[in-house]
Image 1: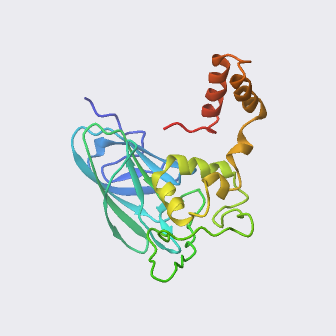
Image 2: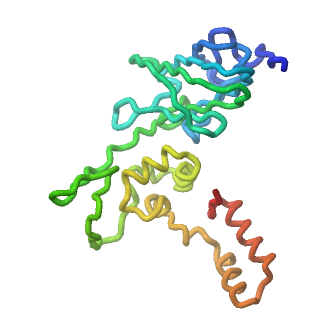
Length: 245
């Protein structure tokens, strides 16, 4: 396999340009492996397009002004995906850079590094969750009290504190459905909510159009065909109202 040309990709033997910016990231690895580097502001990540011809590793010295990951004002781990699978990495830090060494296998095509801040995007410093106080004799496990009694809530839950009301609430739901680390963070720290939809103020039932509800009701009464029911289900999937794993 002939490695792709790197002449127009912003890749040299020591640096890779961040597409759409004037910034560059120093790296240690095979030049022919990296094709380009892009920014995904919605996912708060940078993406390396790769042409890996053998098992190896790459070390990226990432300036914090390009990508960072923090929690409550302190450094937190990045979430790294290689072709959609999360992987382990090693890291050294300074006040201005975070140096990541990422092993990879031959044939991989994409490395995505997800943080809480990316150049040109918002800075998402997740808030510290409210402290959980368990009854005497019980210790919290993963932010929850084991076998604690159910206490009726005196009022309806408000929108969760981490939600920016100026943003589309669907963006939080998309992250929950597509990012395992974000899903775990939410599930561990906000167990009082029945769903991510409830936490962001967008209940699932409010998203289903009336015509879809009618199709399900009519199907139960044999008033519409199975094809019409399947079309309604397909609509829910296409609109990401119904997520199928």
